Image (cartoon, rainbow, N blue to C red; front, side, top):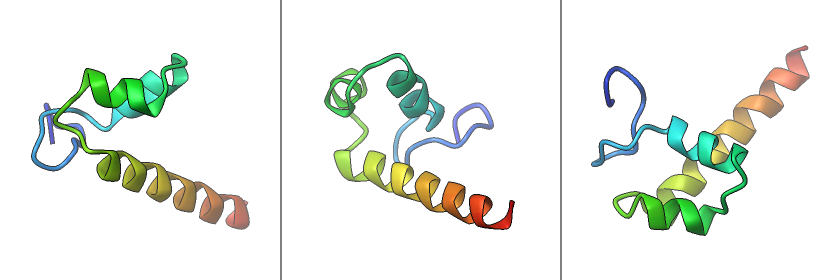
Length: 61
């Protein structure tokens, strides 16, 4: 965790940076260029986990 926020393992990059950058219109490739300590696999794992969580929430709503 970076400053109490979830961070990519082995980095100080908060997971929120992924979502914020995607919201701003940056591609995953651009995010990875901006944060070279984050791997493509790490970013995809976060996105897959988010997708899974959202789908589970949608089923219970």
